Image (cartoon, rainbow, N blue to C red; front, side):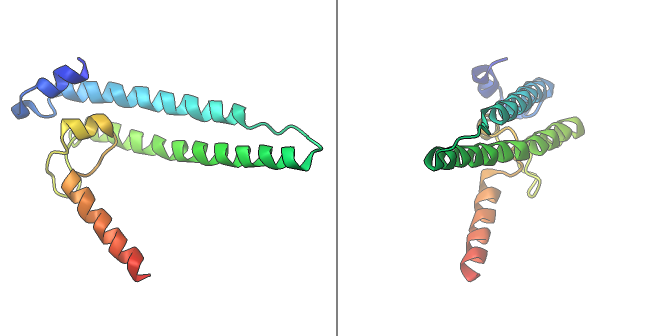
Length: 134
């Protein structure tokens, strides 16, 4: 099944076995791609000894950027694993706060999504208000 066929399915069939299999496969693929990208970023970090201060600073800056990117990717792995666990439990595709469907279009963009768009927006507004009070 491809994305077009998935989106063409009747809403009454939301999160049927075929859709769950599609997203499980997509999540497995995303997990492997993420692990591969983490490994590639480790290789990209070049700790060569250079005598030029400017070159050394550039290499250190590039290494720090690569480490930050690898760390962000590393944080995605548990989210992918949680999403796959929700598939096995039958909770995938539904907002963990409201129980409403997250929606196929949103899950195609962010297969690890835990919240519906409405709940996510509410939570982000709360976070902004909290940050503003600090």
